[in-house]
Length: 111
Length: 187
Image 1: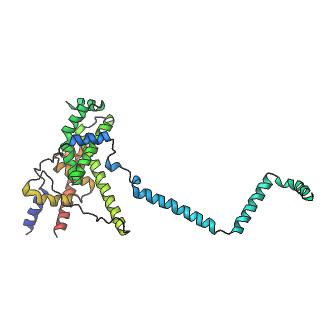
Image 2 (image 1 turned 180 degrees about the horizontal axis):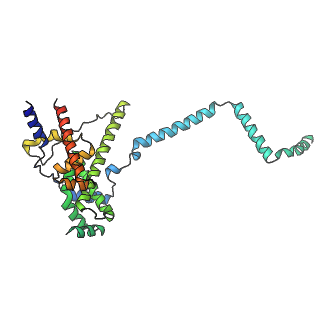
Image 3 (image 1 turned 90 degrees about the vertical axis):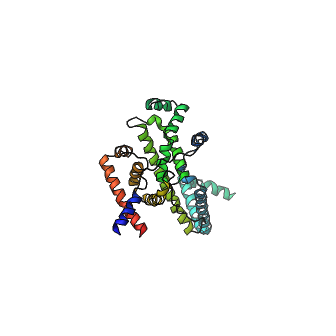
């Protein structure tokens, strides 16, 4: 039984012995020239990034990030924003010494 | 046209030289590619890419090896690239199916029949090719070049940039692995 199995195995392993060379298909050169003239990149070198499915996925991610940012901004309280704004204005005023103009402002008030 | 004239012609982008190159090597390139990718359409694509690459990078060919050795090296590299891209597509197809996209079923590659195998050996050769497809890349290349292209161990070693002893060892391991795979398929 083993001898028969071994014989079969050898037959399979040697089945390519004396095999003829497979010839390239007809009009191979014509198709090759056409491909070269088209200037196409080899198919295996095509970037997967350019596939529409990835482009759509990237677009969806960008839209999702936008939506999250807008949603978060709308939810933050007005007071919180106002206090932040005041702080910013005060710091700018201090930096440019705008607070010195208070006297002028007071004079105007008296009128 | 001798090899030097051919190389010079290719460097000058001479179309006659390019046609001569394609006519001389197309069957060797196609036969090597079909042995590795086991599909005629894919093998033709690989063969076309090989000649495009040869044409574009002939200026980089330093003639340290024979032109045929260089062309075989490009062919095996391109064929392996195609197998890798086929594998990643298959993996992506499985993931798509898991998420309910891509309704097309993932096709298993059908049994491959090499056109040059004699009729009475076709069944055995199909089993052997199925087993070859499961070999590690370097064993697959060594086995294909030696068995299908009838290259000597010396020539295979030049294509694979290794020693003859390393090729002997690769071939020995390839045969051992093929036996194991065939035993498993049978049982």
